Image 1 (cartoon, helix red, strand yellow):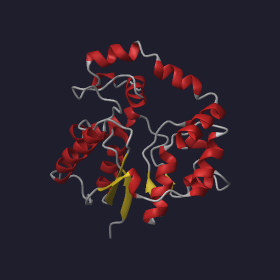
Image 2: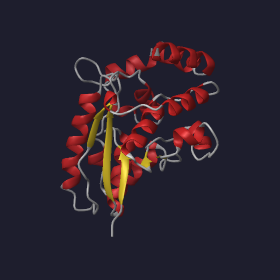
Image 3: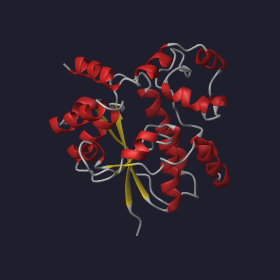
Image 4: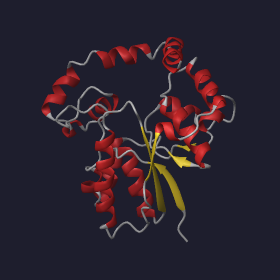
Length: 238
């Protein structure tokens, strides 16, 4: 009997790989998508998931069932003060994306015991996600990271070997697309794509912006000062 695995699906490369991997194993997948109010790529991510869903359903090599996507807007689920406090306590020592707090809130609100988060090559998450002490246990209690040791090139090779490359390359990764719907070349996912040897997925204009980026370099520099980041987060949350 196949099991149902909850997956946070963004339409991106990593989470799409996880969806394909699970379906190939014969597991059923329940995808979840949280609409980030500050992200310009939401419509492109949802479109990518719908395209990929149709390709998945037509592929006989994927034995599991892809269940309907649960799409929820950020304001539509409860936020919990103890999760907020734990997130701030982590931020005092090390920068961590606000999305982890949102996902923890969402899982508690929806009574989800375990959800796959497709983060890869993140040393901080690798070291701390399985800790059972405060504040890590509060944020990461329901979050699982099955791809934490994978690289994008390894995922690509697996998809080539199993015949799923055309599906995964329908994924969308840029958080700040241009007005023409092209990748920007300077957001975090675009930078990771280039650094992992997959710059061919960027248009020429985005590659140029990547090489001349300034603000992303400044943001990465500031991540070395988590207490300052925490101060900015508290200002934004007021």
